[in-house]
Length: 343
Ligand code: SF4
Image 1 (cartoon, rainbow, N blue to C red):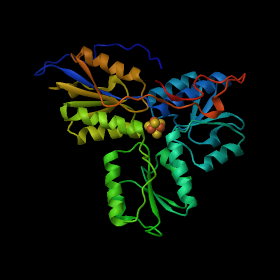
Image 2: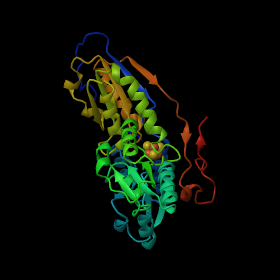
Image 3: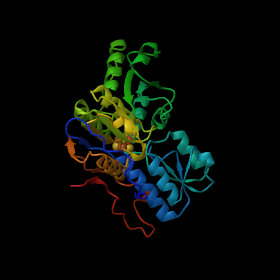
């Protein structure tokens, strides 16, 4: 995703004690689900031409949304805003069956870019609901992913926002309970919520596998390693990006002296750099690398030229495109049709 060249020299090179350095978290930035969703919109535009409607932000990143808008994507809040019969892409965060039905009722051509790891949680919810289990969904009320998952079995799902919610929960049968979670939460806080839930409901069942996705977990592990050494942590990401916001919180919990979330390098304030020797940098799962490189360029001009990668995991997962886009107009399979691992 290209960006216009920006003017440099905004940040001053202020003297500090010791050598200035940057610890750059790896992995950071785009995950497989975000990459797939963004490519899905690009392919839909290529194949059907503009406009292509997208329900909600395809991924929670200002730059990505603005770039796709320039290419002809129109972002709407609900499918009722999409003209009858038009093309609509469902975002990576997933949708409830009610939204799928509404799109069908309006004869929309829907392309489902829900991340497969969110779909996995949807399937778990449906399976437990069929067994008449009550589901405690740990996540943030109002987040699109939580709405989509809760909508899989609305009568059996209760959202638990934080450990503090646990005491007030009212359940039908404490012996028929299972917990699931949003994919982009803090691992530590979620485990604390589960601990409190189990204290109250000892027969609470665990999900069959982790719901917090590999990308969220990996980015948190990397920032935990950097934070204790960092005078300042900068996370590139948008304020509505759950996993990006969690990275700032985790950095502060693990010892960073200060931590901020920025959409763009231009948002870094000179005063944040006062007396700062070591800066830790990461980016959320919906952030293109170009935005991190711009931040590194600006910091380089301020004397932070020594950049060391802190690698805690390698990621090579690629998801296949939504099934509606796996073949081109002539029926030829797209190179991204199958997904899998890169190496
Ligand atoms: S953050 Fe995780 S769940 Fe969300 S799109 Fe990326 S891989 Fe999928």
